[in-house]
Every structure is written in C-alpha cells, then in structure tokens.
Length: 359
Image 1 (spheres, rainbow, N blue to C red):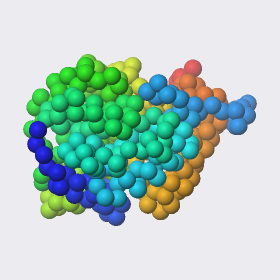
Image 2 (cartoon, one colour; image 1 turned 180 degrees about the vertical axis):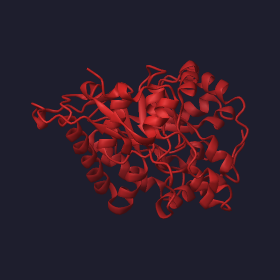
Image 3 (cartoon, rainbow, N blue to C red; image 1 turned 60 degrees about the vertical axis):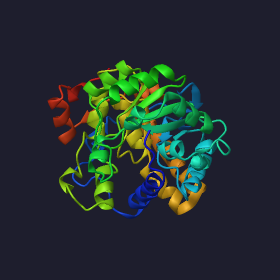
Image 4 (cartoon, rainbow, N blue to C red; image 1 turned 180 degrees about the horizontal axis):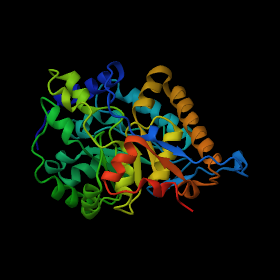
C-alpha cells in the first residue's frame, strides 16, 4: 500500500477551497433538468400537509429521498464542515455521506474529522473510498474505517476523469472491477457505486450490478466539474475536458432501464424540484454536495437545515401539483422531455415521449 500522508491531506483541503471560491461548475452542459417539465394537474384533490415524502435507505427510514452527498474529511477544518452537515441531517432525518476516507486510512489520527455519529446518532451514514484505492487497501482496512465512523454503507467513487486530470493522479485503472467485486463479497454493508460528476451509462451500471453493488449514484455532468477543479489546482491544461460527461437527467433514464437497483440522481441537483424530476425519470433519491457546502459556509448547521427544509418543501410542491400522494406515485408522474435531453435520450435508444404517455 502506498502512503501519501500529507499530500493527500493537502489535496483534500484544496478541493474544498477551489469548489467554494472558484467557478468550477459545468459551463456548457447543464444537468438536463431544464428540459424536463411535469404535466401540471390543476385538480390535485390532495391535502398538501398529508403528502408523504418518507423513504428508506440502508434499512433505515428517512423523512425525504434527499441525501447530503460525500464531500470532505481528513484535514483541519473538515471536522467543522462535517459536523454542521450531520447536525442538519439529523435534525431533518436525512441521509449523509462523508468524503473519501483515504486520508484516515493512511493516517488514523485524522479519523475524528469523519466521526459524525456523535451529532448524528440515528441517520443513515455512508463511508467513502475511491475505486482505485481498492487495489491497494485490504478489505479489513476498509471495514475498520467504516466501523470507526459507524457507517451503514460504503460509497465507492469512480473518478477516472478527475484522476487523469490531476497532476498527482492515479492513472492505472486496470484491475479496479475485480477489486470492487472482491470488496463487495467481503463487506457486510451495502456498496454504492458513484461517479463524481461525469455520469454513469447503462453499460457500466450493468457491470457494477454484476460486481455486487447495491445502489447506483449516476453523479452526472451539470454540477461541479471535478476536471475543472483539477484544472484550477494544476497548470490549467486540457480545459477542453471541463464539460466532459453524461448529463444527469439522461444518465438517470439510461441507467434506470438497465437495472432494478435503487438509483441516486446527483450532479447538478439544485432543488427539491430537481429531486422530483430525477425520481420521475427513474431514480429513488436525489443527492447534492455543492449547495450544502455553500450553505454550511454561510450559515453553519442552521444554514444547511434551512436549505434542506426548502428542498423538502419544493419536493412536496412538485408532488402536490402532479397529484402524487407519495413517492411511488411521483415515480409514475407524467413528464415532458424536450430539447437536448430528448435528443440524447433518442440517441441512447430511449423514447422521450414515453414519459408523457404514462397512464
């Protein structure tokens, strides 16, 4: 196993700083939700206060299908961010993931920045590790890292674009699939396979399911661009890859037709309405990181709680206006798919009109 110690810690801090203070969002590509419109129901015959947004993940109940996605950990300042996020998630009964635990595996004294159970004893929490690291860490090391934070699941992130753009990145991805399959066979908790902003296709989703993954997070293009983050950190080379990836809306629809695994829609999700659109396209949950990182930077745990409450309310409004009493009905709501997203779906072999013709 290679140890990078201080280099890994420094990089984690730089990632947060660049994300907060530089414009590293996708420039030319949007997530695709701007091309998705619900068919409005002017006679919903529902009591707004009775709409049920409750869901379940990793065997635990959550108040809404909204996840605070993996962000950070392993450096001075990360603990404050994670604790604030976790406090808000606990208050509202939502799921949360921590950032890559590579730093704590390399240096166990960094573990406190990931230990959010002390402020979030009941919510679903998932750990995080890069798929490349699976080739170098033993399963026992990863199990120990998960136990240290009381995790209910593990997110394994697939980030080939970020690594190849990173000056110090890991560029030999041979053997990653075998390592993932081996880890899935050894863990007692479910594994979430997630991209980090470039999207997953139906083909890759099938491979991940074969490896034993239990959840798929498409993390498509349209939000924070991790190639842009590395461009800002590095020498500014290869800016042509700033907008690389599969837009989130198209990725959700593509993956949903290839697997029965629960899907997380992330990548450019910016409101409860976006979460609702993702569910209507085939996802079970919506997740985001950047909006909540901004919220914690401006207002701490209270700021995150306000933002999350707004998202839940927005989700309920979408459900009210589509006559969806619960998430199962929202998943069947009629939507109109137009523009570039409709074109992408057609090229992928998906019939966009089918979403509008639901019974």
